[in-house]
Image (cartoon, rainbow over all chains, first blue to last red; front, side, top):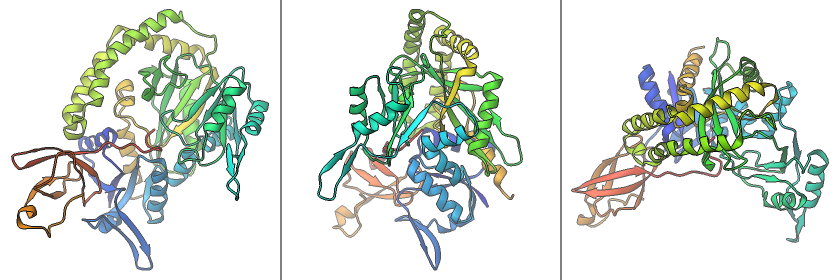
Length: 394
Length: 71
């Protein structure tokens, strides 16, 4: 009986997990979750690709590390694996909650975790009648959102299952709000309705906090978070050109993060999450913005070599060599004066504003190899693999 | 896609290559061209022919990102 890595494609994270497993002496079995026929019938289960029968491989697996990159496929994979009697990390219950920002927030709110005020309107912007005509609902939806959220302060519309900042739109007046609502169509990242949220005035950064639990042990929060920072966009996703830093977390934030993990992981023996949190800084800043922007510009220059290596396709052909280069470039970036200055600003500001932090999302299959690991010095593959190990034989 | 073996003698010639992900041995038709997309029969990964040199084929997995991919 063994641990399997279920995945769709081997990107940096999956290669990083494989490399870490080697270093830890953990033997991983690979389960491709792509062009494979997963068949169920009265004769049992089979799993075959065009050229290989994986049925026995599936049967021999005890624990599945679910790293399907697609949220929808990951949800399906976890349920499927559990129905075959496998233990999963994360479980299908966890995947079901984390799939949806709204479901995550509902769970947080129930247990008094601070969240941004969030409004869900189940109606879609456009309905198609049987005769083919359209009913436009954007004005009604805008009215409902405006009753609950202040447009003057900013209303953020979010795709409920969106990733990488996709379909996140800021509205500051009625016209923008209606236009943005019209943009929201039922899709794979927002199956139904409209999710609106108050704009958190987070200054220039937000946090990604890692919490995990192994079976039989207490949950832990890693004491250093990854910080995404910049003024490029109100969304701080690194995919939108923002930079990454790290910040030591105040103990109260670590404790709150563990509570979030316990809420989401309730009923699961082992779990791992990357929690996204924002700090409602408003005007409680600690440095002059012109100075901050000059430091960010300097840091951005230092980050260019890192970005260049990230884009190098050698990551697909010679992962270990590419990874060494990436680690070296990131270490140089991290040792720069601008990086250290910005980290100090963030840590000081976070400490000043730790009581106005809100949690807004939880990621059950976070990317970590290229940013989180290098910024925080914490390899998420380790708790992932140890969490899986802890489930064996129990 | 990988061409089938029931072709004229010359076309039937194959080059052996390995899937960069699952290490499965692949039979690739000799008339493959740079840029063609193959699918590994073992793991289903889509692979691009990056280079053909002296009977060796350099395969690289395609970078694909779905709408609901990544976190």
